[in-house]
Each structure stands twice: as structure tokens, then as C-alpha cells.
Image (cartoon, rainbow, N blue to C red; front, side):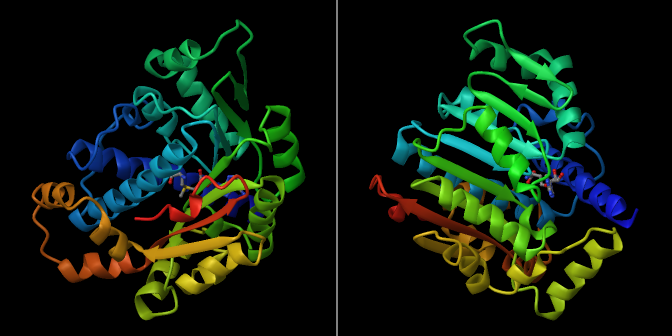
Length: 318
Ligand code: SAM
């Protein structure tokens, strides 16, 4: 059916993200020793502005993730919605910054592929086994559950099933939680994403949600971005929230979060540690400064908080 085709196109977006991340890391934009196990080949060259865009995205998300881990002293849980082939679990393990438990949710078909890679590649499976205390590690076709890492196959639009599965794998409502969604909510309609965001704020008294996606899609450049995605049959059901930074924040404030902030990626890029920005700007010559600006102005990071336990989450910022 049409909706199967659309879902398949959305599932394929996780390969695009990982292929671009793999290429940028091969150029030295940032380090990710694990992505090679999900994307074998470096693949064709990407334009320098694309690499810088991914650099801003990965560093921006990481900056807020680390700020949350500091505020909670890792006594928390992380839930990555639409994680795709993300490698954050392994990187946090190497940095000795693992939360109590790291969860990921994605479509069962994506999860099955990820689990297959984990099973067949010791550099991926060893850290999971090492952080697991018993011999009861659960791995089947569409879920993995260990002491510190859990991967769940579910459709994020089916909230009842997401809720059941997260609870079944011991997501603890009493422990602070960080929710991540990186280029995911745009594929769900406003009602579906708002239900998900609402569920998170209803379930946790102390939590943060970090969302990365398109913004300022109302102008000419934004329209071209939308057309390009639609040409690939991706259903951008959630593009409404991508009109402005205000609409990005409003999605959280209307869903019970206490506070929300949003910055476009041009601003984030200017706030990242500037020695490192200077380093990556020397990696590849960039002719089209304006194109990079346009691109960065059309993505944003929005983060929302609830802080009953007064951990100081409202101070988390760039
Ligand atoms: N977050 C990863 C990253 O940034 O590298 C992957 C991003 S990729 C653009 C979008 C991901 O969201 C895909 O892995 C896709 O399968 C997942 N996704 C989108 N809609 C979903 C849904 N309704 N249920 C579960 N996963 C979904």
C-alpha cells in the first residue's frame, strides 16, 4: 500500500544519516569508531557544507546530552526515539558516562538490522556483554535487552505499544529521563508527535526532551527542502511544527513541559567550542559560505524540561 511505501522510505532515511555521518567522520570532523560497523564503505563524497551541517548536528546534540548527564550524574535513563543506527551507547560506554539504562526505539525492521550487526560484530557486542551482569541477555529478532542497553522494535505512532514495551524493559518513571529525537518527529503527523511528547511529560516528573529537525520551512529554501524529501516519497506529515522556532517550542509547552528553548543551527554553530569549529573549517575548503548559512538556518535543536527534583535542568543551555 501507499503507507507501506511511505514507511519504507522513512526507514531508509536512517541509512542516509549514517552514510553522511560515516563520510564526515572519515574526513575527521569528529570521531566515531563504531559507525564503520553499520556502514561498511565510506561511500561517495559529500559536499563540505553537508559535512559541516552534520558536524553541527552531532556536536549540538552531544553537547546537550552531556549537559544532562552531568546534571544527573548519570543517575538517569536515556531514550532515543527513531535511533536508527546511532552509536551513542558505545561512545558513552567508552567515556564512562553510561546512564543507568540506554533505550532505543525504531521500526522493527530497522531494529532487526541493527541487532544483526551487533550479533555479528564483536566490537559492538562485547561492550553490551561487559556491562551485563547475568547470563540472561535477551536477543531476538526485534528486541535486545541487557542491563544497560535496550533496543525495542515499535512504531512510535502506536503509543500504547511503545509504552508497554518500555515498561516491560524497566523504564523507570521515578528516575530522571532524557528523550532524544533526531530527524524523527517530522515523519509523524502533529497529533502523533504531540501524543508522544505528552506521554513523556506525563510519565516523568524530571525529564528533558531534545529534538533536532527542520525549521523555517516556510521560505523558498525550505520549500525546496520539502520537495526534495517528497520526491523520495518521504511523508513529511509533521512539517507543520517546522515552520518556526516558536512552533517547535509550542509543541512541548502545549504538551505539559515546564520550559522549552529552541535555536537554529546557525546559532548553535556559533556557540559550539570555537577552537574545534576552527579545526573543522580547515578540513575542507568551503566556497559557498551562504549555502552553509542557509542550510544551518533551516535546522534547529529544541529542548524542553520538567524538573520536579530541582536538578537545575533549566540551566542546561549552549
Ligand atoms: N536518529 C537517527 C540519526 O539521526 O542518525 C536516525 C534518523 S533517520 C532520519 C529517522 C529514523 O526515525 C529512522 O531510523 C526511522 O526508521 C525512524 N522512524 C521514523 N518514524 C518512525 C516511527 N513511526 N516509528 C519508529 N521509528 C520511526
